[in-house]
Amino acid sequence: MIASAGFPFDLPATLVAQGFSLRPEADADVPFAMRLYASTREDELAQVSGWSEEQKSLFLAQQFTAQRHHYKTQLACDFHVIEHHGEPVGRLYLERRETIVSIVDIALMPEARGKGTGRFIIEALIEAAAQTGRGVGIFVEKFNPALHLYQRLGFTMVRELEVYLEMERVSTPASAS
View 1 (cartoon, rainbow, N blue to C red):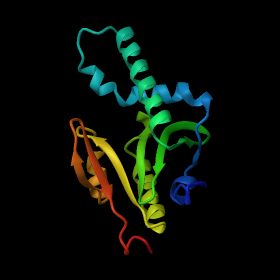
View 2 (tube, one colour; view 1 turned 120 degrees about the vertical axis):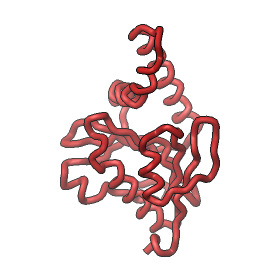
View 3 (spheres, helix red, strand yellow; view 1 turned 135 degrees about the horizontal axis):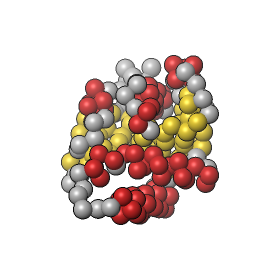
């Protein structure tokens, strides 16, 4: 169980039974976090012509460092690694506020995507947040394939930004049982 700011959260039993676990991120996880970040930008960078692989790698490293610095210095995040049978396969960064739990980042390695893992985690977050009277929020890139998942799970757009949609799933008495 992870807990902070009065918000306990466990991975759902379905995932635990499949060998998934959640643990705090450590400094030793930074190389994995960089590989994970790069995997989320592969499609985008495939469209860039005229850059060598070295230039793409340098760009990704710069972007990862800037994002990480922002998360570490501007947000009150809890950083967690999602593991499968002890091997890191993803990350879950949460910011707990008074009325909302914000999913700052949830990402899985390509081989772990599309199998329901993210959906199970988000559903469990929705339930845990509801039990404390909170909703769940997320910023999602407009072209992110997971946008459809968030919509199916009841997230609605709060506002549209240049590249992102701010979405929220409010806590309702029915879900706060």
